[in-house]
Image 1 (spheres, helix red, strand yellow):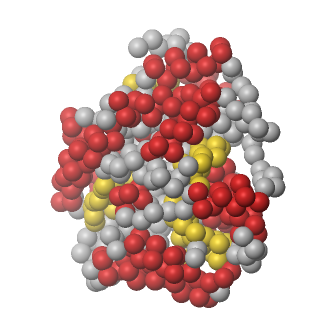
Image 2 (tube, helix red, strand yellow):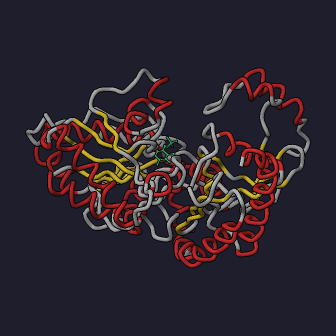
Image 3 (spheres, protein in one colour):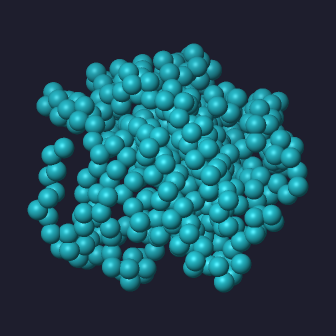
Length: 460
Ligand SMILES: *Cc1c(COP(=O)(O)O)cnc(C)c1O
């Protein structure tokens, strides 16, 4: 590995960052009080290094995206070659580039047959904004302009642009953005740990899905355009719905002719041990939103698959879809995504996730004896650890998110990146993680849990 950042003065970087960089999803007061950023300089496999020479196991694959792991030269080489041939050309007005077309064909080949057409974006958020515009326009073209309403879940995460944040159910984001736009609604998330009480998970899953039926009836079935969901709610804390949930959601949507949007930005491209989360959870969407794992985060790119039933009216009736971003199908990003998918296929990494998933699950489960662990769960290589004050009662610590943050900071300081969603610790390591590295991850997690326990013991 050639490291190009060896002689950088990190203290200077930190100073400059504090002086000039306004960060996303950051509490700016504590950022300044805490001495500014940790500077990540390079990575290899599941490992990252910061500017002070600390080695960190990245249990989050960046932001759930670096699925093939860090340091894959093949992707750099493909980008270098494509930049020399053609650094940019657009896909508007009846033009394309070689990588954009090849990637559309490749993504389509990974999906069920009805997904023949792919629309490119630069991020998951743009994908969801695009989907809302497409779906509303589609229903107009179909002579049903009253189908305008979208239903998502509380604490669903669909991105940070305004419309995507409205599809999502993050209350804090709604409040800062000036409350909800008209036509966006949210039902209870299928979160057995918090809301299941004494019910069997399967029974709870059915009940949670029936919330959708109630909401549809409240809005009037003819007014609802689509339901959107992540197969597993990632940013909410890796909420895995009971097995009964998605099939019931699908049944309800079909009953009323409502479209199903599967937001596969995290689950897509192998995270759950199958290519897409809807395969793991037993449903078939009409629209699939993809980003993150599409390029393993090496360059920004997103994609949307629309089923041919949705595309056909556009072909039959004509008329321009007034929507697009300058960089849709960017040739360098598309070439890198294509190479990423080739690596996933050639190295059978999705199959590998399925194979190593049970090992990861068992390793996490070994933490269940810990006094502040209420539950562990995982599927493929995505998992969660619930922090609790009282195991039997599944009771939370007071001030939601406080203890999670304590634990996250202990992780960081001891060489593990594990994120906190409120008081749920979440993990989504790169697919190249070995069994030995999983053992190390769990060892570091236990160390952080022990330190967290020492901090909060007095409250228990
Ligand atoms: C990250 C994420 C998004 C937003 O993607 P960006 O590339 O950050 O815009 C959308 N949906 C889900 C499920 C995500 O996890």
